[in-house]
Length: 197
Image (cartoon, rainbow, N blue to C red):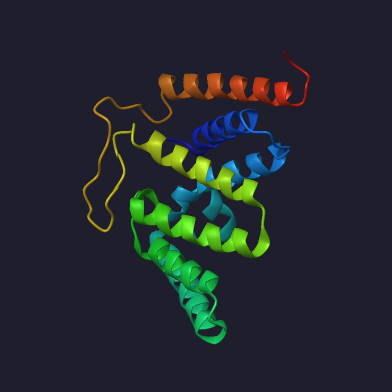
């Protein structure tokens, strides 16, 4: 699916969570779901996130960049003995070496990102960003499960799993879903702000 689809679906899921919680964290939830809904595609050199991070949009540069960042983070971990650096380093290296819809689209990926998120909220707070991130991340994997390419749920094993009925990327079904979920999110935000019934 396209990046904008993941973003709209993630935000729709996030505003639904906020609507059902007693919280004043809509901006934090939207921030978290926005990042989380785009994060799984960080394993693709031309993803929305890598458009900002990578100067060269190819597989070799992606491997080099994330592996180098991971090694630096693991070295910092040996100096500071802080689990945030260990988890960040491992995640970065796995992003570098895995193919698209591999590590970041797997149970292992979810687990490591959740573990890192727990460490970060224990240190800095911002639980609503973390919750939004998880909602967006899981929403991304769920939506990719409905595409022909599927996802490698059990990475490092390379078998892809997908729903028998697929949604074509950029097709009319995907565009209709984006439109409906966009309207829904807009309505929920207005309701949250007290501007709609």
